[in-house]
Image (cartoon, rainbow, N blue to C red; front, side):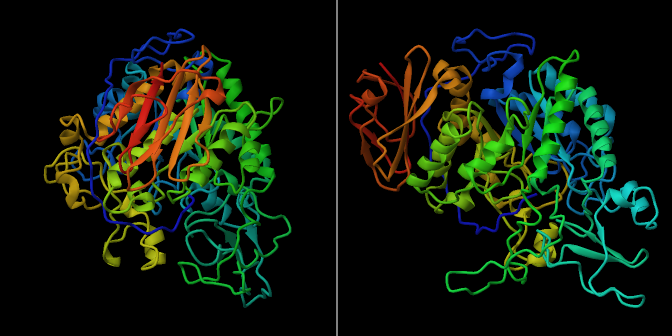
Length: 603
């Protein structure tokens, strides 16, 4: 739900050279060897921590695959594409919300937490997806939206029916400033919605304002009310009993608001001047409504609920993933909880993935932070999702976008920890925002146009082939397909051994099968170099792999000597490389083309 305001760029593609392939996965009940052989099998130590080196894939169901010809993706469409996901090497899929919803915010306004929206199918379709995914050793992660519901949820309809309704205090209600019998007064404070304008909406019937951190039709729950907590306990247990492998918790840092209802501060520049945001409002910080310490108590409670279900007969431990846009590594570390009070297993590290500029020093610093400053916890790296422009728009230069995506994906999959990526990244799909306001579907774009065109540009349908509707549907899709579908699509890239898709498959195979990638630590190399980011993956048996990524459009030559890390070898065996990167004769001289990548095993 956290929206970033970024500018799209033009896109182009380059080719890749690979030296890796794929095989099939074992069943969920199999425990891999401490150091698995190089075959495509589960990469974790055992079922209790399968997620530690896992590959997660976000699916935006509306845009993944339409099976019934209505132009909207659905559950049966996802089931149809499971073989593709298995071949890619995906271990778990995160589904953005599929619950019944008025679809004002395309599923993030939920009207029933224990059902399936008819646009996506039925509960029987969901059960079939679960069964077919299990056959392919793919776990299913649900999106859990606990900050707010739809204003059409029966709970909110009850809450707004009268001030004395038992569910009145399930949501955040507040008197206006200067309210009288004939005047609503002013909103309780200056808090703003993340989707623009005041976060307070007047309800004439009960003559109070309700709070909405996001859209007007998304009223916030009052998490100070224990009844809300108990209700979500039941919801979580319902889906865990359906067999889901965990949850991604949407907007989790926004559950609580300042109990004193204080105004947010205006953001000022170095000259003390305020500025307007993309919605024409005075820019504010959101310290009074985001990342308050009370959130940790709720996350710890959810973890206890999860752990109590894990104690039952279920094939594998569930995982909690947090949408955690937090300002510092210390804030991220707190999201893991402590040994006595564990919280998220995998809060998203957005500090690496959303740097949004190719700056070697910043990447090196942020990666070091998440590898060394979260105790013994596991990083979850993520560079893209349905709320942010795709990689081309945030990192690309319009000329070398495929090479740059290759660099970004190498950081994602060749670093220590779990990895999460968004459907379409593996083929290099481009951000394609609408060009006219009348074409906008996203409420963000409707409010923010033209400065913020919304999130439609990163939500266009998956491009499976070069046909009229790209293999997504046999009817006109809910969002238009980009013209680049003729070149950027799964079918074309599957046939090209040098494609970005095959690069992703090769990287994921290394992550899941190479002992150093599974068990090894990260050690930064050549740390004075501001053009090439290089690091060492050092395994428990002194195995070592070096990785180098060129952040520039010029050829670079680097030394990847790891003697200071106790690695004495000087010869390299190439595992993966981009075009133009020769097999180096020595670890001391590795040549990288523009935005080139080299991965080699130290001999």
